[in-house]
Length: 462
Image (cartoon, rainbow, N blue to C red; front, side, top):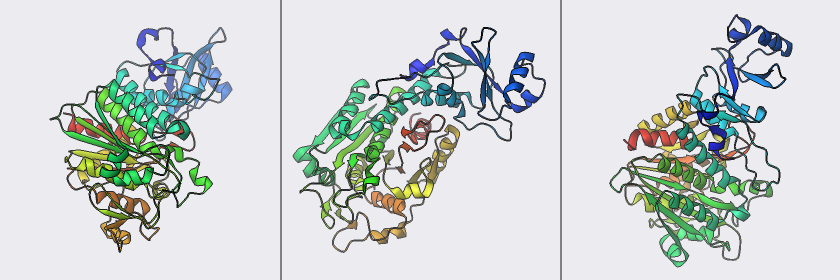
């Protein structure tokens, strides 16, 4: 089901079932919201209007009459996306919000995000309940945000057998065609010559590596460049992962999926920016010609990289793409990547750690993240840690000898390939929800893109 089939316009409002937000004070007091029959029903079911709690109140005909949704009290309000759970918890039908919510816009978005299901491979499909978009909420903006999430989720959730470099290219071409962006794809001998690290990582797979590159928007507008890690499956290479480490490796192209979701949001919103999207699309496989620990690779920038670990491949493909993007000195350059397990150890699956040398941009991103329930946390670029990535035979080692601060050292590695961008942000995402929560079904996820979109809208698209 598409977002516009879930969040419907006001034409169906009159016949829609009311969802009435009620506080604990209103349940225990004498609020006019509740009839005598309501109170008897509430008492019988023990409904106390705790944050996120709901009950269905039947009509005189035994049908769903209305829904009461608890907003708790001022000391304990509901989690920002808690309202979204109703999309799956309520019987099929069309509903409307009848009352005030703490943040109506986020509540409607949460409903749309909760309604998402990846059911391509299932015979039985169950639809969610529908919600009438309330007055004062920009339905088109909600639909754009939801569609961006759906796109990223679909790409990540698709098994690697059906989502290799060629399929990722096709998804990028479809998006570029939809918004009349210009696209170029580099592969084969040209890739080997110009982007040797992308080629080296992907050459062991029968599914050829490539660099996807598309541009959109007025040439003289502020330049915003997005780089997404597109490792469609990661075995770890010759430094092979254990079986448990490969179970989620279809999501190792989550950075590319998130970049495409953000690009959709930017283009659909017609932001006044010159957008460039770069995706190195590869599969890190194993065969006789796989790159090896101890090899030295030359990069697009000209720096040489000694391979300390073939499972640190994401930073290699990103480095070539970043060097290309950096050459034109964009106003903002962002890379999004499922880069390190160390990031998950540091902040878990929900929070996106990010790195930038701009204090101003860091504050803005964190503020947008809090406001939009899209959490990010700035991490330090501690330059002394670069000493641990020195190589005796090359300019730098891709992994280094220390097991400490893995997310930080990966970010420092990438910064070696960026000189000209006015502002550079690196995001080390998980791109996956391991346990379902309101508005966030289990599976592939878009993380940080709504906060980034707000930043780009505020700073670069005026």
